[in-house]
Amino acid sequence: MSRRVIAYDSTLRDGAQAQGVSFSVEDKLKIVQRLDELGIGYVEAGNPGSNPKDLEFFTRVGELNLRHAKIIAFGSTRRIGITAAEDKNLQSLLSANTQAVAIFGKSWDYQVTDILRTSLQENLAMIGDTIAYLKAQGKEVVFDAEHFYDGYKANAEYALQTLQAAADAGADVLVLCDTNGGTFPDEIFAITKTVVARYPLLQIGIHCHNDCDMAVANSVAAIQAGAVQVQGTMNGIGERCGNANLVSIIPNVQLKLGFECISGAQLAELTAAARFVSEVANVAFNDKAPYVGYDAFSHKGGMHIDAVNKNPKSYEHISPNAVGNERHILVSEVAGRGAILSKLQQIDPTLTKESEAAIKILEHLKALEHEGYQFESAESSFELLMQKLLGKFQPFFTLKQYSVDIHEPSADGMNSSVTVHLIVEGQESGGSAQADGPVDALDQAMRNALAPFYPAIQDIKLVDYKVRVLDSNLATAAKVRVMIESTDQQTNWTTIGVSTDIIQASWLALKDAVEYKLLNAGKTRVVA
Ligand SMILES: CC(=O)SCCNC(=O)CCNC(=O)[C@H](O)C(C)(C)COP(=O)(O)OP(=O)(O)OC[C@H]1O[C@@H](n2cnc3c(N)ncnc32)[C@H](O)[C@@H]1OP(=O)(O)O
Ligand SMILES: CC(=O)C(=O)O
Image (cartoon, rainbow, N blue to C red; front, side):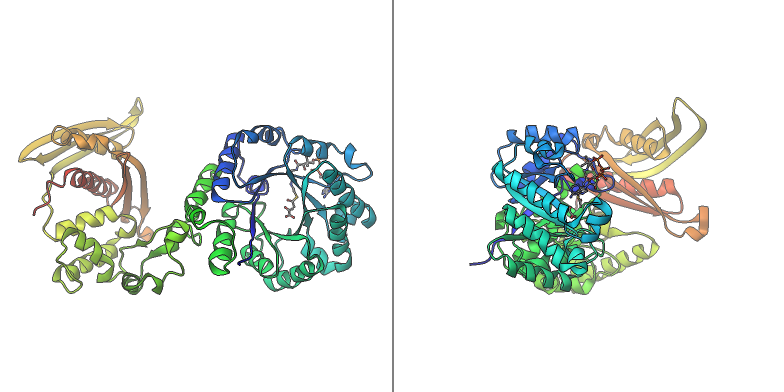
């Protein structure tokens, strides 16, 4: 039977120590619920002695109907020279009313003398008294040995005495912390192995920080050395460079090392959970994140795409489905025919890699990318391009002319007036609009001209508009690339335009956005 590793999440405690992160009570409750659904064993949810928000959270978390996660309240050992019962922070910790608590204590001699400014003996008493007191209140106690690895390297005998004080007082789990994140995996492995051998009856845990970009590797090394509890945060958010990223650790230990951590069905929720937490934390999601990033299974090189089409294992270390992610085939100047074939076959199933059309479209794609287009992020423009080059597309409208008038100072914020003349269904149709920018006015004027013929375009909303200057050494004569993301509330799609004129680049991207919507709304215009 495979060994079980318990995932212990500290997103809401150590993650909340990340620069720029501040969770509301509602945020915390939502995240706890999601972590519970993911099968996380422990959720360290805050420090009740720290602030009223965390105290309120602990009064409300009982409303959730949790199935997996035990909620942990976190705090430090008692203050110097008082009893545990007299310590206000410990009283707050108890008021959180959780079944389990985590206590951190110093295990590096220098930290005791220089930071706590007390004797090594008093620190051992602080650890022992605190844990004994919490055990007497019926708590399950996790002891975080802060700076354990640095402490062990400086004074192994004392670092081990701190663990012994915790074990003697009845701690249920001894967690070895690489608090400064400066230790390497070989050291973590060797030191953890020594501790695991010393405490065969106690659970040993690992808590790593990412200051050398080693936190995941270090956590995995500790598990290989016998640790059974792994602490970390979702997406690795945390103090300084962050904590060990549970989103990488869980699939690593489960899929690569064969340990049991969460169920297969829960693992398939990992991508959605990681993105959810990032959204709630208001931290930009890392598209390059292993396992769960958008790019984790994106293939761009033509030879890679050809191989993945033949057998996904050729360039994928696991199936993206295992972690709830998906494969993306990117179309670009480094693609080959294999990259565009499946897209071409959706339009004309008779096409093959050897078809003249496949070769022609690939050449056209590469020429446009040389001009500044970038289709990997604008697949809708590429779909239209394929339709057009295959002679399958009949225009919904053609442009006769547009004129743009930008006037400053603006009257009531409307500085741009646009008139658009289109040919639709063989008739001329005009539209005009005023807005607080020329692109918005152009968009509205085009819709006004088209709405009588195609009411569906009223559903389209602009979600994002990005401009990138392509050859900046030409200053104002440079080409610009405009990318527009649109939505009709059901799907989102991105289109692109490139020109030396920003209005024309925007027009090209807007026109593609509307054509794509019309094409997909009815498909009536595609020639059979
Ligand atoms: C490695 C980690 O991430 S540990 C967790 C760190 N997390 C946090 O600090 C976030 C929550 N912290 C807080 O809200 C506040 O620091 C509080 C409420 C806990 C304490 O606030 P204050 O009483 O004003 O103290 P302050 O934060 O300035 O200083 C920390 C004190 O804790 C003491 N301390 C540090 N570690 C420990 C410990 N393991 N056991 C007992 N006391 C400790 C320090 O020596 C210092 O004491 P001093 O004031 O007598 O010098
Ligand atoms: C306990 C903790 O957060 C640390 O040592 O890093």
